[in-house]
Image (cartoon, rainbow, N blue to C red; front, side, top):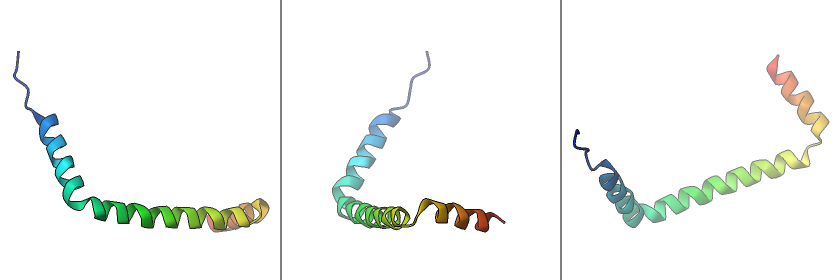
Length: 61
């Protein structure tokens, strides 16, 4: 049987290190992305579906 490398432990240590030292940055990026996605979703919900269909059909051509 071939011995296995302890890759899982190393990855877990790396993820813990990133979370401990850069968790604030990941939270900030997550917050900005969440704001952008929710804003885009709200814009799409305001526009009537028929107009969206026409708009995307026009973009395709």
